[in-house]
Length: 160
Image (cartoon, rainbow, N blue to C red; front, side, top):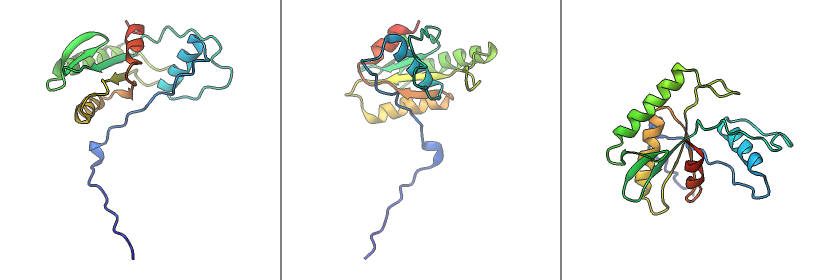
């Protein structure tokens, strides 16, 4: 007897692609870890020995959006709206992306405009709110990846 397979009704425009960065290896130096993280963002492979004490402090182009427990949103510690009204965040990101387009701020490898946005939220956050934030950022054309709870503070401190 064959079992019926239920295919969910999901439209392609409802899908949001979110990447998860590699787990940090505590045996690596800070430079090696940063090199691997940048390679992840730029979607390229790291060859063995390539990241020996690389100082990639130029990667202050990373934007970090955080959804806080009270529903407020911050972009690199700048308060910009709430999950129910993200318009201020959207406007600021459009401004940044437009400036990067105008100044031709591109990835070294792929030559695409830098629109990398990491985002995070407390573990207690409702899934619907996380999806809404991811969907909002995706709608701006951001290259998204999620930062696990606790790791966001390090990202936020590293980005001016």
